[in-house]
Image (cartoon, rainbow, N blue to C red):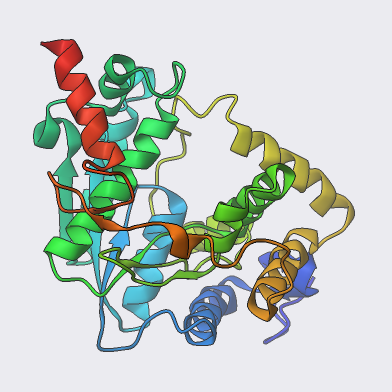
Length: 312
């Protein structure tokens, strides 16, 4: 198979686009398309400061690499979650992220959750009794809280995450199965800033996971290959596997599924309550100042309070 641009032997075949590219043109095509998506969805401007949430994985490190190549003001944020076990997951992901930042002379902010609050994610999950034995919900709550806090405290205009198409399609699939209208209302490439919440963007939302893997390898980006040790049996993985079966039979199915949802959402053709978010009374948490709809303390601070009570 030949490269569509130069006729040389292709390295990456993208059936959903009916296009194959050589290594050189593929690593040019990804940033070009990213720039197109940034402009299409009005994610951010050239003069805005971007904080990239980096985990040591292929997607977040590739996103940081792409934004820097495109000339944006992009710094990184790594959250040390204290998830290790046999694969030393957090230690290795931190090492790879730190090495990437040093290699490219980039600024990396590091927040160690245990050092900041006294508990690692697994311990916090155990003593707060959230997540039914798996720390995924505690991890998600903590990351959302800390990413928004750091973006606000350090004066960044926008928070960028490395969610790819496979991630977005799996979330959409699950929310559609459950008809979770609150989540459907908020899903998209851009979540605007509101009531103390940072603007959140997903510049890679239209790239397949295999495309980002190919990009990371072509660019020589060293990333952590292991999944989080708590990911086994996760619902999201099951949804991804289900959608992969559909994609194998119908190339482009995931992209069509996601894009048609965005079109319906923009045109107002989703049969969900569009004003539901307006019903929430958002105000600052009395302890940390982060936005919450709870009467006094946000979910994160209530979790910490419960953990401290149990451990005393």
